[in-house]
Length: 364
Image (cartoon, rainbow, N blue to C red; front, top):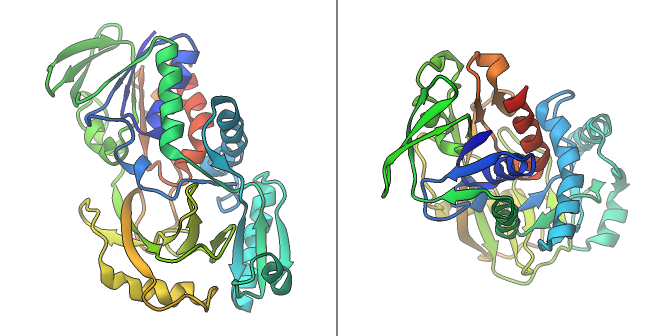
């Protein structure tokens, strides 16, 4: 089977790899001139454990499995990573109840090693931390996201697949045995394939609208939530990721570390109506206030605007977070088409098992 994957972000590359490993002929169409230039290059690069997500949801099933698969992949492919662990901290009794609920949900989801410790025990491990309790997640870690995508690309190409850069998909038309794909870009033209997987991230809804005959009622509204990050100007004071309790639309302004030893804070949640990546320096005020609830020693003037990402959400402010949406032939009735919508966090962690599930849909 010849499979076209639209989008060379982390999920698209994982899907293309899974299809290539399954013996399919694979081409990835990417409108940019490199891999991972969108959502995949603007996140926390965290390997999540999977304790937050509702029972039975696709995220609850995929994230814990993806956590284990991703660590194995990193080991076998030489992708830089570190299992640094994470604290979800409570600074008052209400938050204490919330982290107890997160622990219970994590156990339901099959997350291993979760442990609730008191504030003194947390400070013994992270002396700068201020909290009354912390939920310890030993299997949370950090990864070189670009290194991961390069390894996926290497596997794709080693199994005969290819990536066509600067190749935007303009139209998908059903044929007798599959799909005719119309491309724009530097070398416009057509290609006939058996199956198409739409992994276009922020452009997934736009791509879906180019599919002739695809029910428009199945295309969910996209809601954009910008996540801003501020870098810390000094030396890191934490050795683990430090998360507050979750907020509407995200996991809260947390301490994130990278493999180069830098510490930054974010993301927050800024609901926006168009894609944009400028970080407003004035947002630092709310960062200082939130961070000082668990790190009172944060010095004035130490936060510097860093970068921003945009989450492709399917629900807006005040609404329960939507699950990943994987719309395959059994849902919409069109053979050889799978659309992925709303693949935000924990998309990177979930990418390998998600890819296996998507490829299975193509031959079901």
